Image (cartoon, rainbow, N blue to C red; front, side, top):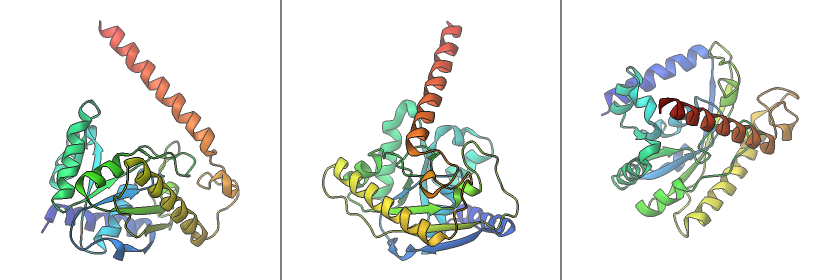
Length: 253
């Protein structure tokens, strides 16, 4: 029994109902009833981790998400994150969080990761980091590809949150497991290919994608930037943050 995690999920379900969110979940049966697995999720909005958790909850399981350490430092969120056994990621000590994730996988847990690392402004799949593959390979567990679509309509990078009653459909598709066989690069390539295919399938099933809308990819006639434009925006943002950090350090000397 996990009273805290279960209570958080019940609360989230009430909030989602008040928002009128309509969840269409397929493939949840692909999640194993027992044993470890990496849950690899695409990243289009800030609420993705809560929506992805639904897939595991369908089969009575919980996902331990890897999340930045700052969340655990929060006075309110921190105790909840620890009680739900999520994994803090300290960029200054990344090896520790990686080891904790591998230990959890070997202990039979589901560990949730976002291979893109950051939200995709284009809502297309960005290049994947190899962490999910490396963890699965070391722990000898499968990777479950989970594709979410519609999350970006609720709350995404660069746009105001829409947490009122929006009646937004959210699709969550869990694909068949990908075995951890081969090199991390080969496994990552297979994962990206599978999730790209799932994303197209989910988009086709989703219904109308109105032209010019901010949440619709440029490929489908929407107002989102192309993947190339989004990558450039991310690089510029990262450079600006690095410059700001350097300026702060210089001022402290």
